[in-house]
Length: 233
Ligand SMILES: [Zn+2]
Image (tube, rainbow, N blue to C red; front, side, top):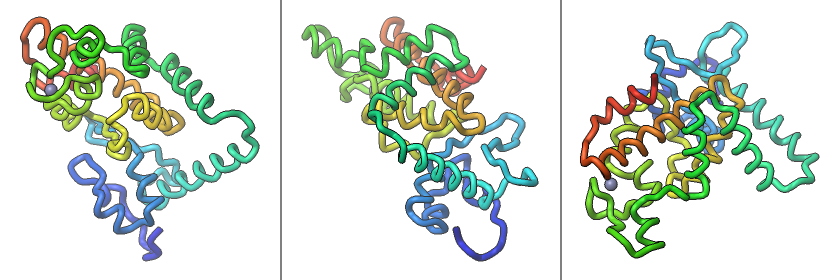
């Protein structure tokens, strides 16, 4: 925490609905900066920023945000001290529990359930198993169409995530493996609106998959903004 004594506003750390990486790394030590970057930014339609801040006076400030983070870290530390079980099992259980508890359509839960062990029938998966068809993305042509390509890397996915009302910049480095990414995202469950953010994210993933199928089987292109709007309703 910088000790200028002045309360700093969250908005100083956010520009254009994204964490301002330079500001955050400039003001906080590496560990704190990473923790902050992990907080999803939600873009509320009312123009009112929703954060999981629980400050005394309800003000949104860097200080109160930081205190909640510290508390979380400390309680995590005390939990692990008495932990005799395997953390891998724990994280798997948490993944399933969170998924089934989300306020989303059942078919979307099933969809995410298929994404986690990578059993979606993306072109690359089919090609690898059957040597049938082409492994390349029908939209951008020269990239292998893996599940991660469809959901994160393809130009359409990039467009959609840019417009999405929830951002997961802090776990961007995990998008090479859906399961790892989802496991990191599930860590947000305990935060204020965390479940809503995760549910919204699941809806976006589902819309991206539906969009891919529309393109694949009907040759129809959809507007990225429409996908985001559909996922947000
Ligand atoms: Zn593509």
